[in-house]
Image (cartoon, rainbow, N blue to C red; front, side, top):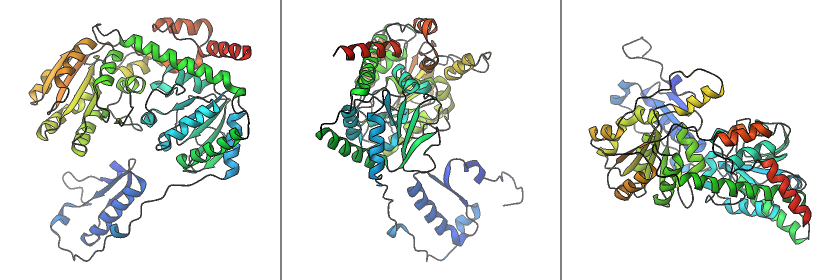
Length: 480
């Protein structure tokens, strides 16, 4: 090392931005200590640990006298309650608001029941990050799902127009919220509180413990006869109607199952119907993430993984490979666009060699569609986005994996009858339309005729703008 030798390069910088521990072993004797430290740090920080080992250490002899820390390692206890006065302040914040909203992230995992009950007691709508989608079953009527580019229509509108937002268990980074809104942050990490927006109150607590505290506090106030809902009942009712309309519209679009090229909604309808209750999905990056955020049901014990921070294309197939190896008794799917699938299709060989029953679905639209949309939104000429129409079924067969090609939702449903319960990997190449999925993220910036024209352009005139839903709800509440 340090001689600019053939194939020598500084490896630690490669992993610097993704690893929680990143070291090069300097002497053979310290190798056990460094490995031990790497393992304990990975467990503590729930991340990747990297140890670079010079090649000649492989045959170096050292004394076997190192005592590892595994025997005394203690898993961190993250249960941290909030101060009682802060719990009351958060309750008052939501109760006294005309347009409150609770936006949660993965940090609330394990407290779905408490979150659901709080929403019901307070009559406050909920939103979440995409990554927090598995927290709920999927059919909670007051859950608007996510905002931003991966959003639903109600998810965007309620983020954009809510006046008082409880941010809990998340560090969602995109500026999708009302710039004049007030925010309360509940998080276990002090550096996150107030990081994404000016917060009027920061609460240092773990999210599940805080939600249990808040629920107990609210029940006491209900028992005392206090009114928790009247100031924002219309807002909540508008949310229920917005979610009902969205679900009905998605269902209608999914019924277009005979159309060719296929529509994403019709493919996801089939996946939702046939996937096991504990299926695992390795989801690639691009339009497939938009579709999965909006249309993939994550109820029961279904789980998914994607590349959330760096948005690394090619993630899907390796994720499916890892899931198949780690969870051999669970059904595993990969969902990829044609761009991401082409990058890592060689991993089909590993799926075959390891006898992994992975259902690989590739959505072929002959474009890097996510980037194409970005170029359209920023008035750029299209550049570097066109993809060839590859027959990925034949590619799969070349790797020794059975392949299918379909052009509609109906054809996909027929293929799934054959591959459901497969004992070997399969590839289903779905030729999908390159029509853009409705860019809901624009909804926070449109009104009047511009908004009407936007909904008409994307065949979404069945969806009522939030302002009209809220006005209607106010009138109905006043009549009562």
